[in-house]
Amino acid sequence: MDTGWAPQSNDTTGVVITDILTLWGMTDLLAIQTDTVAISMSVPANYGGPLNSTICLGALDRLTNTWVNAVDYNIVGGSKTFVAGPYNASYGLGFYGVDTTTTPATVWAVVNGDARNFAVINTPSAAVPWAFAGVAGHVGTADMAILSKNLGSTNLAKYDLNGDGKVDASDVRWLTSHYTNPGGK
Ligand SMILES: [Ca+2]
Image 1: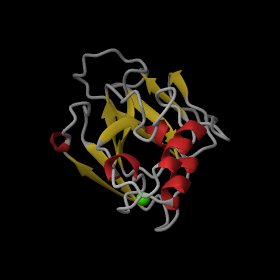
Image 2: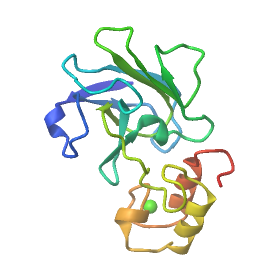
Image 3: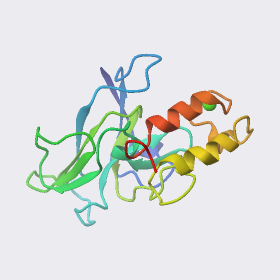
Image 4: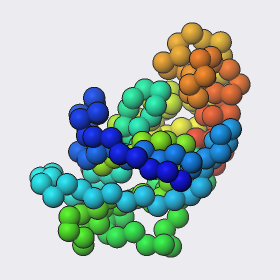
């Protein structure tokens, strides 16, 4: 795995409060699912906001340029669980937290998604961009039904989830891989 850093000033959304970490090599060229890894980043020492679940490791959705909680980008199998405390190796996919026992505090998350860019963010988007229906942040069969009605759509900004310039079955596969619980709903 290779890493790189971009300055915070590259962010255009205003929610990023650190430099931006880029990871390459988490996934094979044609595979969606990556290895499961724990990522941790330091909160800037001068950050004055509350150290609770409003601050988290964020992942950039490359389609919409929206920062979401990094665990919202995970492939199915985990469960989104906040922990106020340090990372522990027993925590599985979907766990994320804020550790105030370190100085400065750190945020961490257990992820397996195909995101490339990570940073500490203080206001994650409430709705993941590919949740078209129902509860914000919940992705399931209701979203699939909407996507299925829009195959062939030219609204790439909304429905071209895998960024290949068309809305087709590959986006359906992409969406099902991002259901927030097995089987969707
Ligand atoms: Ca597509």
